[in-house]
Amino acid sequence: MKENYDAIVVGGGIGGLITAGLLAKRGLKTLIVEKAPAVAGTCRAIEWGGFRADMIGKVQTAYFAKPEDTWLYRAFEKVGVTPDLGIVERHIMSIGRKGQVKPEFSLFDTGAGSDALIDLHSIMTGFELNPKQKTELERVLNEMGTISEETCKEFLDMGFKEWSEKNVGDIVIQMFFLGTTLLAGLDASDFAAGHMMGAMGPIHKGSFCFALPRGALMEDGLIAPLAKAVEQLGCETITNTTVKKIIIEDKNVEGVWIIDNNTMLSYQVKAPIVVCAVPIYHAFGRFLEEKDFTESELRFVNMIMNGQQEDYWGVYFLKEKVVPDDFPAWSHVFDFRTGGPVYLGDLWIPLGASQWLGATGPKGKQIVVMYMVGGSEGHFEEDYPSYKTLTEQTSQFESIIDSEILPGFLKAVEHRGHLLMPGWGRFSYLTHDPNDTLEVKSKAVKGLYFAGDTPYVLGSLLGLERCGRAGIECADAIARDLERS
Image 1 (cartoon, rainbow, N blue to C red):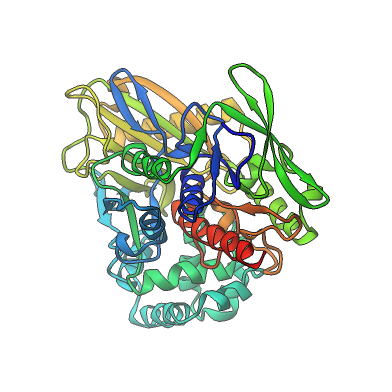
Image 2: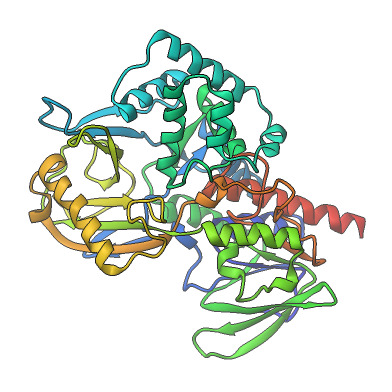
């Protein structure tokens, strides 16, 4: 590690690696500082008892029909990597319908456009649309599909509940759209109308996909080749190192104070450019303070902080096979046993299902991952649930899996672990003033930039896709500023 660099990127997750690679490719002497023992962020793998799997069921959600057209793919190509991305099938699972003796699955066909949404409606509501209602749904979707990203931005301060009451003429169609906000764990009044339009429009046109590395884990199929390419571009990386403070004097970046997590010794590393590529809810109050933001940026940061709750992931390592070969790898589970459908959560089968998601393990053994939505609007009905609440709610889901979905599941569990992780980007859909944004270039501090999945970018993007676009836009903004200077 040197004492001086052209740019320092804080965070070695996928957003930080993309941004650092693009800066190094432009000739900037770039340093990545990563707190963990290795780069990867939430794309890292977990290992236990001979098993190896993605830490969480993370998937690229993109508003393009093909993975090759996505922002993430484009970002990788700009760094010099051609990722092998494949489509992940998403299913809706129904249990407990009258006369039903085993789970029923319906594929959410991302290329089917409005037909897929009509099918989703029938599952989520329990009844079919009549011709008049289908016409109204098509009308609303057509309207959403013609709205530009800039127009969507104008509706970020309006809750979707308010928008639907004004613009959707049928109460059943209103209820369908409002019901989809439950999958995000948000109240429909807090779900920005602009983001609903930005999501539903592409789905209606069949321009939508879920993607993962084909036959590989995130760490192996995305992080490893990206980190290698970044290194070949001349970018340096230090791990096990914590950024204590971004040094800012007179509203100008001067570098960072870092601490070696092994020796606990601290150092100053100088650079006129620092990119915060960790989520802002990890940076704020640690190495960035209120004074480092404008008032409008601060309102956006507070919106994210207030809207960021932890989701629950239960990881179950099975000592014997209970998942049938034709079982989908990813399902939203809806329970009809008490009448109308109740969303229980998701099942993610990285090893042992019909679609292999890259996980490995001892022969004859399987992995099941259970997902439940966090936050007060989620399954636990609390922003920060107690351990008792967590265990009670997860035990109920486990029992349903055992009795209704995968008989023998609980008996087959060899080991289980629990993860409470910051959500997949729920804050990306919250209402806020369109003028209150934290963009890739700081409005308050010269030389400070943002990347990763929390700065605002046009389009209703989240997660990996947002990291791709933000990385490209951040590197472009830095290049423009350097040209001007």
